[in-house]
Length: 124
Length: 88
Length: 89
Image (cartoon, rainbow over all chains, first blue to last red; front, side):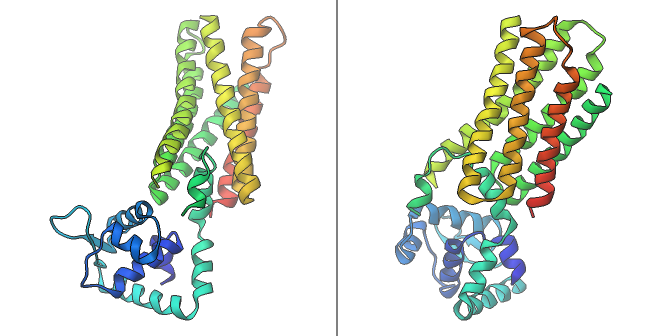
């Protein structure tokens, strides 16, 4: 589970999206429907969906560019996501701390330091 | 002494470039690819200066174009970052 | 040709300074030491480029600053690599 976070989860937003899709494995989602459900911006929801489709936790619905479905690439991955869901409901703060202490965040702040506009940090 | 210093800078440029390459792999943020390329060009600039030192100055100017390119890459990285950002 | 080379080095210096300023701003906002190290690196690279202009263009007949130029580049890169090793994990 720690590995799942270390390798695939970069933000609480992403985690929320993953868990939402995991709770409804039969349903396919678009950026808009995810955004409505979680009350986040459709643009960033779309980006997160694409990220996770690339890392093979989700898959694109066949023949559709915009629809995604929960599809972990291995049973081990499914187990880890289920474990993460339990942990997130029982020990939310620990999970959030794990996400925020990731080394990738330091690297991100490096890249983000070169953003001249700051508004995109506030409205997410 | 100067050659030694320059050689050390060359090595450090390569190492810094490798770090940025790894950041690129980790975050898939093109920004770091630009940085990796930039630092490698900085290293290449050192190497070329060293190799061309004994030839005419025309080539030295060419060598400094590599340096220019390495800084232009950093500029491109910043521009790219700021063009891509508003969509997020 | 001189003026073009001048412009090149000044552009390099300006780029380095811009990076340094952005990284310093990032550091004051996030307090991630990596940003401070890389900020110092770009300050050093700016100094390196300015020394180059001074050495080759402004006072070409003056004292040879080659060693100082190499030293400024070396210190810059060393700071950056130290920061990358120390604080990127």
